[in-house]
Length: 197
Image (cartoon, one colour):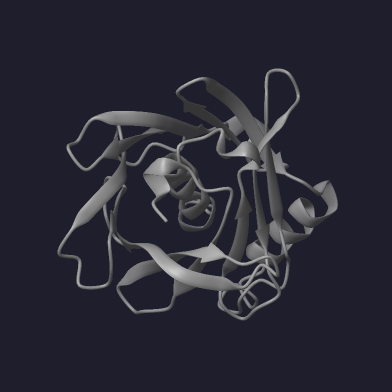
């Protein structure tokens, strides 16, 4: 299976390390469990300009695609999704104003323009309160937040659902594989890696 050919369901799992965020993108079975590796992503935590590269495996020998911020340290930055040759295949950006209460993103891909936000306002507010308390900041958030992206006709084009796990684990669904799987995987990783931005 190849993300570039379109995938309707996959999982994203964060691997915990000290200096970088690492993510495994895997096929998802009917029960939502992770299967074969589709891509491996790595993000430096202290970068001034966000850039995440997706590789074919943990050896990082073959880059498949990436996303990168257009600007440095901008809370409303647009991120371009680039193929292995550096050509743009989509983009996304956080809607800073709308995200004060409920995280909201805008996603553009060939033939699709969508807006995504946290499914539950209650969870969104609870998560913000949790993150504001200094004592709880170091403890992983217990909130299971989910995102739904809908196009201009109101059709769901992407969902990301956080599973119940100590590690960040998400089940991502792309109904009808309407979005290039690379753009969908980049957005899914960004929902975790850039959530606190």
